[in-house]
Length: 332
Image 1: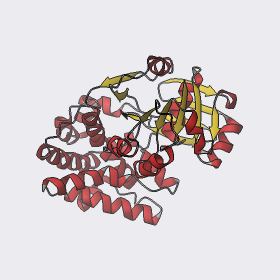
Image 2 (image 1 turned 45 degrees about the vertical axis):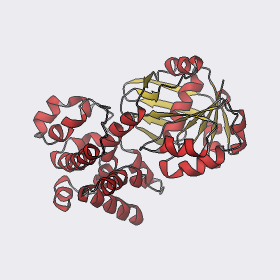
Image 3 (image 1 turned 90 degrees about the vertical axis):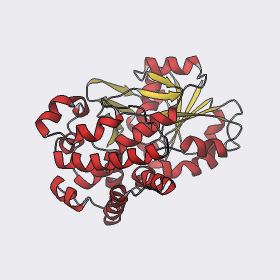
Image 4 (image 1 turned 45 degrees about the horizontal axis):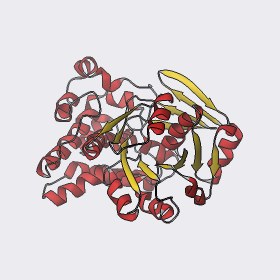
């Protein structure tokens, strides 16, 4: 089985590297800069509470040419949501008719966009619950926990075996879109992590930041109710209880919701990492998705709209405003 990772960024390198470490035949497609690093250093995959994994450059293939897609039995797509259309264009007419594309991307709607462009190819939705950051020199660090989810779609048993051997067990779901909506609720914090410029654990330990996040999530839930969307629990707390739990006083929150704080003390969001790397943010596919859902359902979304504006300003400035929790709460 030939597995191609399209999008050799943090998630792509971590997932693909773990698969290559257990003997899967993996080809990464990415930029020349990443190719040079990985061919020189290999992959060093670390986890906040698991053993590290080292993968030599001889254990995988790296290509900057999308022609490598022609060899794929499975494509694991890990590009940013704003790059989905471009990725679909790259895959079209290159993939075998029996190939499977697995979308391990943030946000909702990517599967529909891919299926529309790749009408003769099986597209499977997925959800990555954990956070991975690129620490440079081929080291990718997973700072949070969680189990991968994929749409139930007769996935090849060999593929699932590789994921299990790699320590990345897959939970198969009938309604992956509901899972993705549940993950979207959690991902609304990605933007706040940019605006705070603090590690996630430190940020979530501050009640005022959590109160802002609670407003973002409560607003999203109202829109989802109007649209008859029922998000599935992704983290430790049921979606409906998230706003209540987040508003709890710090000491109570740290006891009752300690699972939400179980992470590497230095873990950051992928959007914060994008700001450091001068890449475009996924804000239009996270908080922006709630704004669009609000327009579709005739619901006001002033909180998420404001967050979209603030993140846009931060990326144009090239730096976080580093708001305190109190400052951000007053702005919102």
